Length: 332
Image 1 (cartoon, helix red, strand yellow):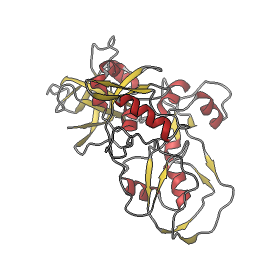
Image 2: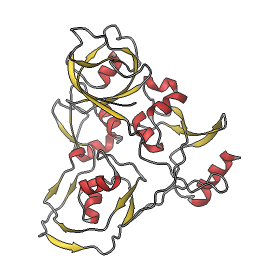
Image 3: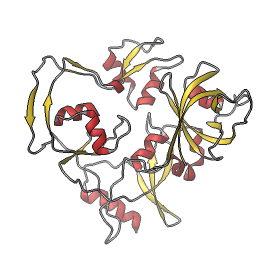
Image 4: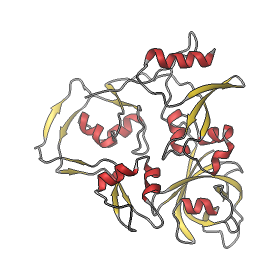
């Protein structure tokens, strides 16, 4: 019955909007979202889309820690969340290809202000994400050429067009079009646009615009799912909850003897066995999620290390040195 109500809610309230999932199931009395993995999707991206942690996804899909495949089916626990009331100003629903920079230009505010109003820690946005836009009087200046810091990628060793498109969730055809590429051959150090570049042909003089009421250009509807009677209106959240975030920076090293293992594993000093860690290679910003399989031994050879990782995780990060700098993030 609950499954039918969820499906009926999608059809009745917004029949033209495609849901993020392909359906729902009830397992042990718990509602599960059935998600089909698309090109370029990662566990981290899926966790943000549905407002759960990577560990919660792996709890119901243990084989996913070896990597995701296109068309793979995942069971994601459904976490109901109430829609927050906006204290002042308006809201903006993120549309396709929109960035924090393009939205800030639309409303005459800065990217830092958007981050502050919405508790954002990076520039990543998701389709359908709701942003708070507060009233503000600001001077608006249009630069000659605009290039967002997150729209450019520098090609690293062993990277291909396919691996880059998966990393940013775009198609090979888009990558060719945005960079005027005639072939699929790439060179180390080559700079590529990984989002549609934006240009302006004229420079306007700064002028102060007092905005009495912010009017967005266009807003796409949000999929709202009613579950049962007397249940508050709910929405799949794009924010990952977790106030006990731990970040470390230092050196990473390969775990010897893991060349034949496809799983992403790690040795860490303090994180308990089974903890999911996110590792970012500071040289190329590539990321991977690993599961802690044991404790990093305290020896003279490891005193400067923060983590040791398996060969599959080492390759996923595009590492080329025996030791390289990383940032490790996890939740207690």
